[in-house]
Length: 395
Image 1: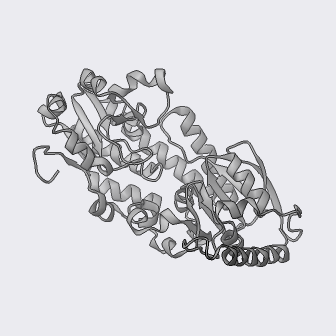
Image 2 (image 1 turned 180 degrees about the vertical axis):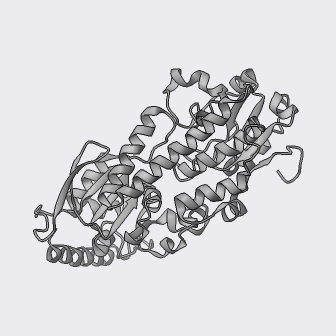
Image 3 (image 1 turned 30 degrees about the vertical axis):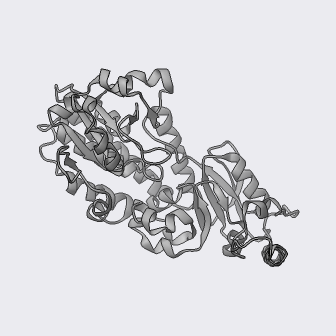
């Protein structure tokens, strides 16, 4: 897009925002931030000149929504919405990031999100969106002028942004991994981002490393005859959830080939990794021998364990309930899925994982994905690996 046109649009939007505020005085006491375009303001933004900047060389890509998008061959400035900033960090392209979501800059949430926790400098960047695909701040995005915008999930949001901003918007895959189809979508998406950000070699390095870890986990687990039934509880989705929130294709249990009781209903639901709720009666019927709980949900789940019906579960009565790190916390942490797998392997198959120190392995994996160890910093905020003493007042 022509830079003069962008500057003119920013000026017009600023004048519009001021006029709107003046007209609304006396009608509301609610404060309005002039540099933030609300959803209503965004609907009024329209750019007629669809010509690409003639001085910039472009390449054509097909994004994960099947959209054909022209993006600059050389990208120096980018934004990652809908948690796609995580993959930008994986790709070691944080120097190109010029804006973040409000959720990511929030101390309470952002500091518990690994890609922010390990790169706190990102919290100081301009806020360009509320969170996910909710309320992008179009005027501010124009002001910081990214070369390309990545966004997870919805193509209609991407179409609207691209039409109104005349900035390339690329839909990428930020949903779960776990099944072959989901893994393939993630592979294609990461390669796409690597191509656009000139990080293709790093993208392949990440994908190869993930497969290397998965192969190691599967090989170790295959040497054990232990087939005890297991269950994941407290699986976060749309917020923190209780004991009956689970995942039929939870990656750590898939990587280990563990006997996940929830896998029995996967085909009836969706046959993919996703958060789902089962009934209390279903959990009692399954009666798993070993239960793993996401640390992000531990407060809620611990209270449920005090209910008489759950105290009789085999895993509870035999003291086989363990806390793991949250794979799902502002969407999906691929490194944490691997780390949880090694800890669970240590619990289920102690002989085959005898040489593994889960904390050391965690920092190895986090260093690969984020550039630095993070286990202590993360678990200081949300708790780490441990066997749960359910009768303790500390739970």
